[in-house]
Image 1 (cartoon, helix red, strand yellow):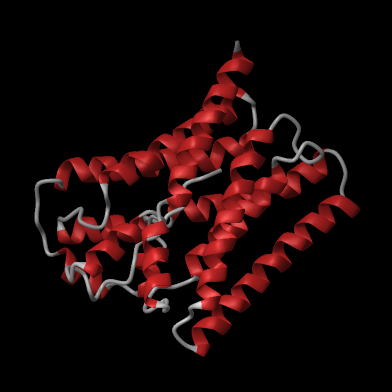
Image 2 (cartoon, helix red, strand yellow):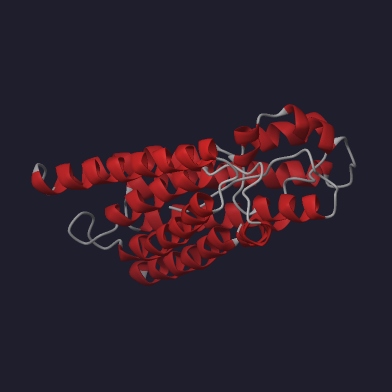
Length: 262
C-alpha cells in the first residue's frame, strides 16, 4: 500500500511540475514573435536547467534506486529548459546578453559534468547517492526560495498582481506531493527541499488570502526591485508579466520566475 501511495504522489508531482515547466510559454512566444529577449533574463532558466539535470541524475537507478519518477519529470524539465535557453541565445537582445547566457549555460554543463563524473568514477554506493543528493538538495532549495522577493513585494505593495493564485497553488501542491513522496520513500534528499517548497507555497497562499482584494501599488513596487530579483520568482509568472506588458499594464516590470520541482 505504501508503494502504491508513493507512486500516486509521484505521478501527481510529475503532472503539476510539468504545468510549472510549461507556464513560461507565453513569454517565449512573445520573444519569438518580437525576435528579441528585450529585458527578460536568461538567468532563471539556466538555474532551473541546472536543478533539473542534477535531480534527473539523482533519480537514476544506479545513483538512487526506486526514484525513477524523479528522473522522468526532471528529464522532461531539462529538455524544456534547454529549449528556453536556446531561444535566449538565438534572440538575445544584444551581444552582452548572449554572452551572459552562453557563459551560464557553460557553467551549468560544467557543474553537472563534474557531479556526474565524480559520482561515477570516484564514488560508489551510498557515497554516490550522497554527493548527487546534496547537489540536488542545495539547488532545489535555492529554486524554491526564489519567490521570496515576490512575497516581499506583495507585503510591501499589498497587491498580489504578480503572484497569481493558480501558480501559487501549483507550487504548494507540487512541493507537497514530492514531500510526501520523499517521506514514503524514506528519502531525505527529496523530503527536505520539497518540504521547504510546500511551506513557501503555503506562505504564498496565505499572502494571497490576505491581500487578494487589495489593489496596492504593485507597479511602483515592482519597479524598485532589481530585474533578477523579480525574475527569480515563479517561472509561470513570466507568462502573466508578458501578457501584462502586451496590454501596457506593466511595461517597467521585467518578469517573474519560479520552478517548483524536485
